[in-house]
Image 1 (cartoon, one colour):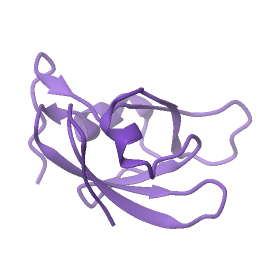
Image 2 (cartoon, rainbow, N blue to C red):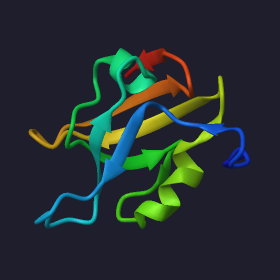
Image 3 (tube, helix red, strand yellow):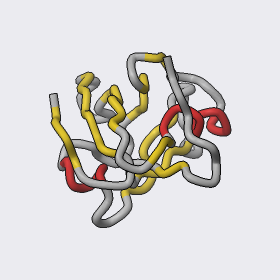
Image 4 (tube, helix red, strand yellow):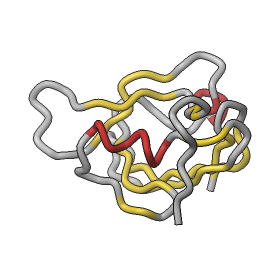
Length: 106
């Protein structure tokens, strides 16, 4: 069950998602990683990786405007993200602390 934070207090993981021109799938892909953010600090997330699930809820193919309610949350809360590596197709999970640093990479 997801408990999204209100928009006034919601923070993210230090990554922006989008769809590339000419992209042939419906995946939201990492298009920017914020310097010093949790996504950069974990060292695992790469540009182009596809976001597949948030806290085990599938988000692959969802409209970009809906992703915020899954990825954003209260500062200090933990979120599990499942990605697919663009270059290899490898699926991996990371657990990040929103608005802070990395917790674990699995």
